[in-house]
Length: 353
Image (cartoon, rainbow, N blue to C red; front, top):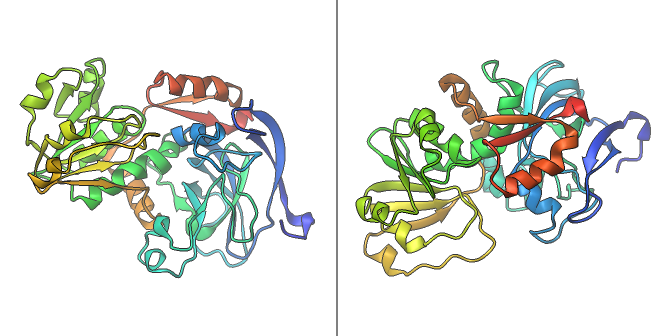
């Protein structure tokens, strides 16, 4: 923490004192503004499944007390003396990280998420001074301007919030693997990530197929822009779709029959994972060899690509389906996420904190 307390900002937060503990309303201090810092008055903070993994201590090494939240949408309240990109009143967002070294090859190419020094996570991380980071379940946050994105006027702040994780997590791989006209893309799972991925893939011009366990989300998938919908619980699906797709984007966090999904790829097709199951996946190498197929993974995108994603979403009318909740409903919402009882992202109205 910095030594000069008089210019620090005290803010109300929702924090968990230890793994799986109940949330508490408390206060923390945000650092005083450095020359390139921005103080953001947070309006909405999305709930991501990774918030739950972290707050429950399921990914190990949790830093408690913890203030989760990396889908932050708000308004600039104050700026440091050397800030050039934003002014007070601008609509802005903060995603999954708040700093990087700025010097390695990945930072210099706009892919800060792969920083070789280690990117600084928005919460449950340590900044380069060794201080814990606290996230968006908070009224205010201080972030260096290089890690803040502008929310276009065409996007409501509550809708924009989940795009800062769910949006960029799906947009980045779709773009990287050249989704566009003439490409056949399958989206596995139609939850918080999948329902956004459908919209992006459709807007990019691909032929989009949704693969979901049952048929109960068929109508919604078609409204989001899917061309086809198949239930993976039906064994005939894997026979009918064999060798069809250029790209399969797997958004689910459960273990799949990887060989079965690889069989759906064309020659040179790729299965890209953005969902992360707790247990290792298994597959036969022949599933790759016989079709020159690939298995890949993708993190979120860098700051430049996150801005591109937001602008693309505004231009094409892409928005997550959300349920806005109060700060008092977060624990209940966590339980509902674990039961898949949400269409499709919870967003906290921070004015209720």
